[in-house]
Length: 399
Image 1 (cartoon, helix red, strand yellow):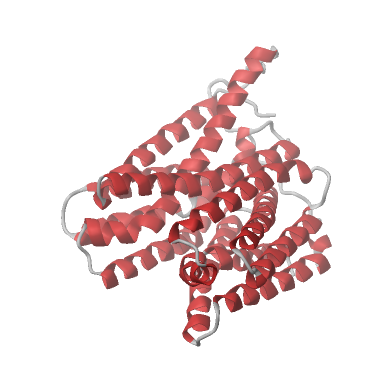
Image 2 (cartoon, helix red, strand yellow):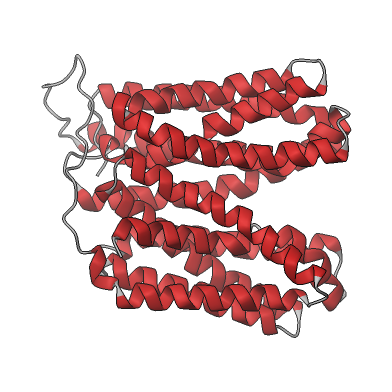
């Protein structure tokens, strides 16, 4: 099986557990006699493990090939799900979340690092679109299992088997990943091209730190917008804009469907017109969608804005990953790999922290505040994207 298909299969499979937690937790907490808010403790441990694993993967890949690392990462997620399926207490579940975070972080970073060096815009967007398919399939699996009177443990047991099978596939196909890298994209040219690189320690460290901090901030904010709109969109549309529960549920499902469509459609477009152009248009599109959501009016206007956010946000993370080499030293494979792993870690932080903050703001004010919150974050993302473009044109290096 070619690496591209393996990557799509991996993302489809590892997406299953993440999209099912909201459906499984009500039954799970009753099994352990825990309050609804105990989920926050589990997520804190899981996200922390994922961030640590993602950040460390860049260095690990300089010593270990991507094939064995992917096999180990998927095996860890399978073991984690098996532990959760058999867990006698919440603390054992917590251990399972930590194991899953370690395995998922390694798998996610390794796949993105490989894709940044081997895939084009079409392939990397399809890889991330596969995650959307898995996220859609997971809730259906839970619905079938629970509607047949089976325990929530069957959900995790079934997914543990699926991920164990994937780990076996990765083990058998570990040499498939040993393919020549495509040439790393050069840094964008600009009016300052040809100027000598800064040689002093101070002269080099300042732009390097600025580029790295900007890239990590951009990634965290983008994934926070993406997750926040999906998590709180239902509350925003029902409580904030008066839509019926059925209409709001359909709209949220359509939002995630737009994420899939955007990655499937805009990937080929990026190959034709350039990843940078599509990335810039997508960043502006997210802000436009948030602005439409903010405009007072009928509920369908907010839905249009939300669909715009989903469509525009879809290709941003894949294309930002693909263009990582433009923000590092030309030809620096190790630097690209490490930077991608840090960006994946930042995305995990943003996807957890920003929606949590949105929830606190919604609780303090009302559900309508989601739209202006997304608009502020969208404007911030535009600003950081512009800063990164300026630093790239100035010839900044990241080692």
